[in-house]
Amino acid sequence: MLNAVLLSAAAQTLSANNYGIAEAMPPHSVKMLWSDEFGGKRLDRSKWSFDTSRNKLGWYNGELQYYAANRPENLRLENGHLVIELRKDPKLLRGLPDWGKQEYSSAKIQTKDKIAFATGFFEISAKLPCARGTWPAIWMLPQGSAAWPEGGEIDILEQVGSQPNVAHATLHTALFNHTHQNGRGAEASVPTACSAFHRYQLSWTPDAITIGVDDRAYMRVRNDEPGGRGAWPFDSPFYLILNLAMGGDWAAAKGIDDAALPQRMEVDYVRVWALPKEAPAITAK
Image (cartoon, rainbow, N blue to C red; front, side, top):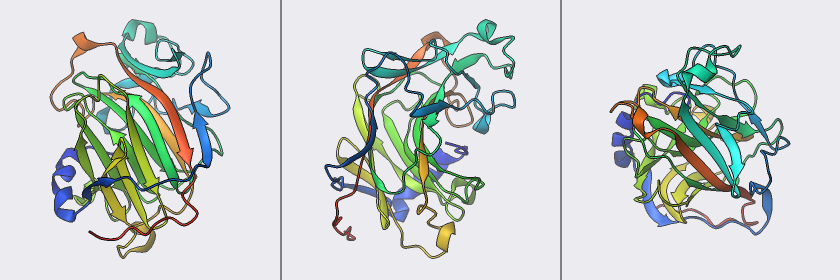
């Protein structure tokens, strides 16, 4: 998500590198490490914080949104769901101290402070927006100050409104990323992504990262490439991010449909389980 300008081009090469798979997701244990069911009246601020850090400067990838904090028009709990809503409302944004002349507003949240994970099974139940220009994402970055992409990035789910029924999964590292035209990832067809909730999943072990939807894995990257942390920085804590962006080089490649706004990403829950005590070996097919 940080720098996905050429992701669609990179994705076209992924199948040749054998990152695409079609099999059952690996199992997880019954021990839940962390969750949010979004059953309260407002966002649990002991679990989540807002990211508004680049509103004034502008966000990456040529994105066009202003990320609001504590603004119910953009983020709220409703009927047991987290709702992140993308709106076009420049008149209401003008005058805010960190406004960067954006015309669109949305929200971006991340697990708070020391809430981070290193391995586990992650499941996020979400329903996605459907409009040209929208760009919802469920992804992870490392704690600390590592520059991108040296610290790594795990994109559990990215979708763009011009391809509403396609889920993208990608890993970025110093040696494998779109700027080198060797990004590692795959895509899956999810025909009802915008009309129904689906379970977007990540199985993260010391040996492999597997990503899937509704218990079916469609991408796996193994920790078997030379290059040390340049190839595999996924041995330190990462925090989780949920956001809905607008525009940018990838999401707006086929234009923006203002008439379809507002659009929303709804999240039913976020759950993180421990791995099995003896995780089964993932063998090559």
